[in-house]
Structure formats: structure tokens, C-alpha cells
Image (cartoon, rainbow, N blue to C red; front, side, top):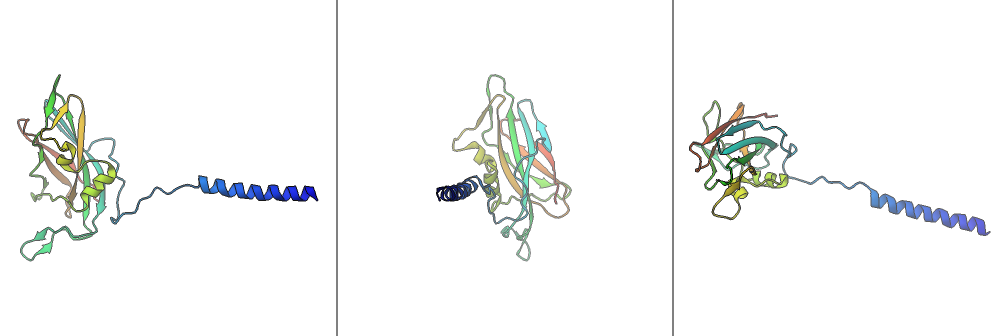
Length: 201
């Protein structure tokens, strides 16, 4: 009688242990829920889609991702008052990277702005999605806008051969193929204009 009893106890123990191992080693989902739809991976391409430089400053633009909005932009079309970019509009997210080339010194980025940015061929001012863009940038681990990259300090400097970056999200009107991005650093003589191709899906 002892042998059957021992075998039975071993069998029950094996089943119990097997259940514990399956529970502890079961794959855990890393997916996060979001209200945005059609969100592409927020990972910049290894190669920039646009570049520009001065003797002191290098600017590179990467595609960070895209999404379809879930809320109206709040930007009204005049006359009529209709929303220019209602829910369901396509948004492209870019990462602007800055590199300093000041030997034995630091590049002064104080007052940096991205201004007069427009759509090539249209001339219309490109509008930022400040509703959902900052959350997308946060999920990607990239500061939102120049102020996010600068932080709380009044002055903003970049040591030689180091880089900083920030994200921007623009509503994409129908039919456009390129964004004329203007990066203005007051310490540089002239603003830099970069033609950023748009790959709307």
C-alpha cells in the first residue's frame, strides 16, 4: 500500500509544481493601452530624413512616428468656424536633434525657436498638435519642444560634441509631401531651413 500512496503523492506534487512554474514564467504583455488609433512605433529611424548645419551647429531630423487623432484640433477655419483638423486627422511626429561643434567651448542655444514652419507648395503655416503630441513624445521618451529639452534653466548651452533633441507633432493636410522646418538659434547668423519629407500612410 505504501508504493501506490507514494506514487500518488509524487504525482500531486508534480502537478502543483508544474502549475507554479507556468504561472511564474508565463509571458507578460508589455502592450500599453492608448486612445490614439493607427499609432506607428515611436522609434526614430537610424538615418535622418533631413540635415542642415553651420560651422557651430548641426541639425538632423528623424521620423519618430505618426498617429491619427482622437479629438478635434480646436483650430477653427474662418469663415464658418469649422475645425481645420477634426478627429481622425493624420499627424506626423519628428525628432529634432542638435549637435554642437564649438571647440573648447559650448554652443549657446538660448532662445531657440522653431518658427515660420510651413508646408512646401502650400505656404500654409504648419500647425502643431498640442493636444496629443506631448503624450506621444513622452511615451517615446523624448522631450516635447525646445522648452522641454532646455529644462528650467534660463540659459541653454550645449557642450562640444554633445547633442540634445526634442519632438514636435504636426497635423498633415491632404496632398502635402514635405515640411519646411525653420530652426532659429539666435547665436547663429541665420536660421536653418530643413525640407522634411512626409510619408503619410
